[in-house]
Image (cartoon, rainbow, N blue to C red; front, side, top):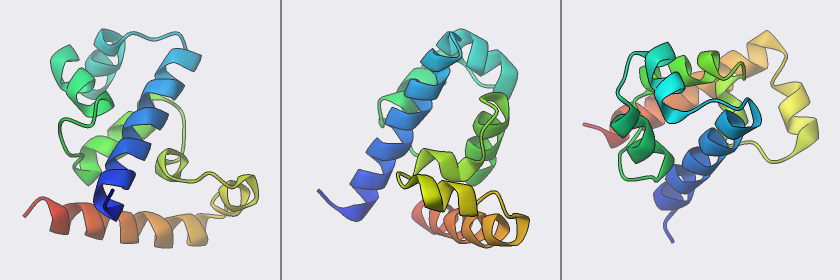
Length: 102
């Protein structure tokens, strides 16, 4: 599996996991973010790539930092709460996502 495929799968899994933790439906998330239920389902099944803007909106709707979708290590997740570090990581993730969708 390529790094890109791993990342897409990771984001999709964490998104669905968090949505279910909050007991929200794909329709609920779609309404909160401004996308269709079908698009939420495609994102959660890694059938569609994420734009950084969409990922940020989803993170906000699910009440998490966008880094939540890719971070496994709890210490790193805690470090990401520091605004400067989190901004740096988020900026790098946005650049990667934008390059991927050109």
